Structures are given as C-alpha cells and as structure tokens.
Picture (tube, rainbow, N blue to C red):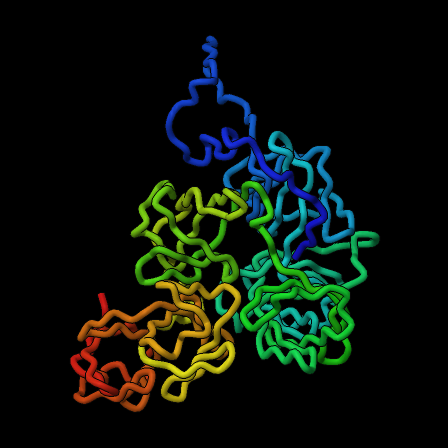
Length: 439
C-alpha cells in the first residue's frame, strides 16, 4: 500500500466537515442561495481531508472515487516516495486521495501487493512467491512486469486480483510490498507471517510499537528465498486525518450491530449520533459495501455517517469472507490468548473490551467472545461479560457432536455436523441441548 507523505492539517472547520453530497441533512443558514435561469449543481466548496476507495472511472484529469468526480490536475500521483504518471492509474485500483478541503493535492496508490511477476499459469500470477488469482481481469500482465495489485476483499487465505497496474521505468520503487494481517508473530526471532509469506524484520528501520498478531501492516522490503526481508513496516492511520471518507466491504459485524469491521482492517463503533443513508443500522451485515465518514473529535476518531452503497450482499461474496465465531464460557488467560476447552483465542490490537473488562481480570468472569477465524487463527474482535441466560448463542464448527467443546446432551447438533453455523442452545454446565439455528 502507500506511505503517508502528507501531513494533514490538525483540524478542518467543523462547518465544512460533512458535505451535503455525503448525505448530511438540514440547511446552512450562513449560505446565500443564488437563483439562475438554469439551475446548476453548486460547486464543491469543501472536501474531506482523506478519501479512500477504488477508482470507478477515469476520464482525462477526472477521477471518480466514492461517487465523487475529482479533478486531479495539478495533484501529485505517488506510490510511496515514487512519482507515478496519472496515465498509469487504472479502474479498480485502490487509492487514497488527500485534499486541502477544496482541491485534490495528492493521489497515493494503495495496492495490497507489489513486485515482479515471476510466472503465469493460466490466470494465476506468481508474485513474491505467492499465487494471485487474476481471473477477474480483462487482460494479464507479462512475466517480468513490476505490478501493483489491488486484491478483492475475501478470505485472508486467498488472494484475488481486482486491478493490476504495471509500473515502468522511474515509477518502479526499490522495494516490493506486501499488505495484510500479522500471523505467527515471534518477537524473539523477529519473524511473522503475512498471507502465508514469512517476514524477517530484523533489519527494518521502522517497526510499529504495537506490532501484534492481528495487526494490519504494510511491509516494504526484498525477497530472499522464501522470505521477505522487511526494510520498513507501517500501519494505516486513517484516524490521523481531521476527516476521512472510506468505502469498503463489511467483513465483520457484532451481534448487536454496534460495531463493524471494514476491509478486514478498520473497526468502527456506531454512536447515537451516527447517521445512516440509504439504509438503517439494522442493515449492517457481512458483505455490504458502505461508505463511512469519520471525524476527529477531541483527538478521538468518531463514526459520523454510514452510507450504504449496495443492495443486500451477494451470497458469493459473503461465502468468501472469513468465518465469524461466538463463544461464551469461563476461560484461562495466558498473555494475549484465552484458552477454553482446548481452543486458543487471540487478543489483537483492535480487540474491544466492553463492560469495564481489562486484560488482567478476564479469568474472574464468564466471557462472551466474538471474532473471526483467519488463517486458522481465532482472533477476538469483541469481548464482554456473558449474560446470565439459560440460552447461549454459539457460532462455530460442529464436530463430533460438539461445538467449542460443549458436547450435546441430545441429538440437536447432529444435523449440523461438519458445518460452521450460528446456533442458540440450552446450556447446563458443559453440555448443550435443544440447539437450533439462530434467526
């Protein structure tokens, strides 16, 4: 992805933070309306400091992103510290657009992986020792091309290209890039895994202080055999902007629809003041494409608006997402993991602690965990005190007549054997009964 080279202004005028085009309501009494013989759309007078999404249209110096047609003439086009010609931009490529509130100042390429194509087998591209499915593309790059690839949102164990940009000459950076979730972190060995590729960060000049399993990182470096030797590691900090507008796919949502995850790496909490356009809070669901607007308020990022960009999610898209889990019980804590009935659940940087819970007090209460299984790792996204109810909600894999180690006292789990399901069951000690699909 991209390195942030632009320092955003500390704050934008609060009256200019949300455009009417983004779904705000009410009239601004300080604006004088001018009536002309031919009604025209008023010119854009303010833009968010940061706009993130995929390019949906390119016409000359006009780039459309998040349903905004933006004039990028005069703006710098960058990939990290490298200048890129505007002609290299392509539809479907992820970008981050920086503005001064009135005009676009910079467009940063925001790919998920970059490097040279080492082999092509059918529609499978080999890059950085990884295989990327390019069946969705209308044309393929050539072996030896240095490419920047934006991948589709889907299972973290798969890579599918949504757009490929071929960089040439001076546009080619000195490093390759890999973006994704940190797995199998070994701080003592200075190793971790991203998308199945081992990363050695012993020589990295910059490493996030909060690096942990589940962190979403951008790694820049070079290949050495089957290892990526990291020279620089960054995390995305959209919250640094006074206002950010981001379009993406919901990849997780909690059972109360109070908190959701976008593109597998950005978490948002719904506030009483959060506005919803073209939908309701109850419409937050896996696979839905939304445009979110966040704003810095008292040095804290707050969710201002959620604008639904699609109809109910395509089941084919939802089926590709990492499976969600939910489990309740009294657990044993070991560092940043919770152990329960032989299962290991991982606390990550974005784990939200509710009900006043802290890391040091997790063993003294019955907990309810929600999260996702990614690359075989159970990552906790939300943790709270479990309700004292006779019925328990469980999401997970039913195997050998049990779910999360709770053995069935009857035959109610039998129809779900071998399936990842969302159930509601009676709970008595360590056994469950009368399990049925949770509507």
